[in-house]
Amino acid sequence: MSRKRKELPVLEHVEITDVAAEGNALARVDGLVVFVPFAAPGDVADIKLLKKRKSYADGRIERLITPGEIRVTPRCDHFTVCGGCRWQHLPYTFQLKCKQRQVEDALQRIAKIEIPPVNPIIGSENIWEYRNKMEYTFSNKKWLTREQLESGEEFADRDGAGFHIPGAFDKVLDIERCHLQDNLGNRLRNFIRDFGHAHGYTFYDLRQQQGLLRNLMVRITSTGEVMALMQFGEDDSTKISELLDTVAREFPEITSLLYVVNTKVNDTIGDQNVVTFKGRDFIEEEMEGLRFRIGPKSFYQTNSRQAHELYKVARDFAALTGDELVYDLYTGTGTIANFVSRNARKVIGIEYVADAIADARINSAENGIGNTEFFAGDMKDVLTDAFIAEHGRPDVMIVDPPRAGMHEDVVGVILNAEPQRIVYVSCNPATQARDLAMLDAKYRVEQVQPVDMFPHTAHVENVVKLVRRDNNPAS
Image (cartoon, rainbow, N blue to C red; front, side, top):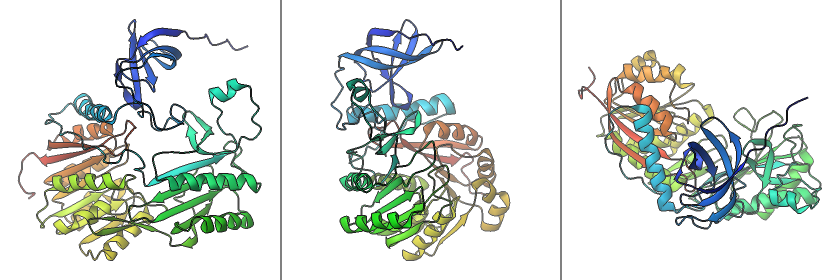
């Protein structure tokens, strides 16, 4: 017989003193650090402990007694339940200060190398409806909020469409309106959900791995083009056509209507056949007169306007004169490579996703860019000393890795290649700091520029310029 878990207490009249990692806030009670989501510095609240360790605990606000002076009213009705925008209750100016400190702390605490003063963070002009891409999950296990459970009401219909609940992979919060993307995304998601209800479509069961309506991706570019990709968990051609015909008729603004029949365990579509139901199989983004093709499997920065600011920083830090050979690692669809190509002799881009590399080549061709070359494959397998011997020693390297940062083998090849400058674009200052410590053997950090791509979240992009210590051209 298992032992009953001891009920943890409610800590009364606790003052929240600071922000913490992962978008949480923190308080200190008798030497115990308590992490609390959706709290603001200055709040006084009763905190219900949920998990407790020796020196720290996780809790939630049981009762907000006195709101902190900086607290603002969240815009979203789903705030505190969805978990996506954990800082909506904090003023945007304060969010930026927190992100600036996050970058500075990571570089000082993890890199432990000499760092110049960090430039003031570049904030986002738009703090609502700034995302060009959103993904929604359809589920037959709609999450019930505490208020719904405590109401005593019976909820026989549990079908919904929205976001996964943190820590509950098989539960989805049914969303009425999300403020992160143009309202078209909300109208489209809600229409498909309601159509499914009205016509007896099955919603996906994430545990049993069955059901027709599974996932929806909506992409909206600054050029006004719209991609909608529907994932189905079963191959029912009649119902698929019925739904997509209706969507095409009700939403004529969709320029790329696609679908996937995905019967595997996860929602990733990299290995799936994407079918074009109506329109083109891509949409296009524009930046400084350049047009970038984005396919259903392509990576593109999700905040289009801030992506331009980010790439301008990268181009600035690269300090190109027109004579340099540039390597763009983790190039995606070649956005940075094509963006800086006007200022370089040649740009070589490397990316893991073959479809993205195909788009990168098309992007160069359609923009009349003839000084780029792209290669597909795992970075540590493609970027080798032999590759550099064949294609030339780079003068500048631009790297924009995923959140996990760079593989140690890749860092080793970069150190062997000895480019004059490295521009490191990162979406995770912690792993960036780790990599900077490895690069410190031959490079010094000359400039640091944080850029906020995701208002109301704790995520921050950071660009670092590194210069080779000997400051001489490679021999």
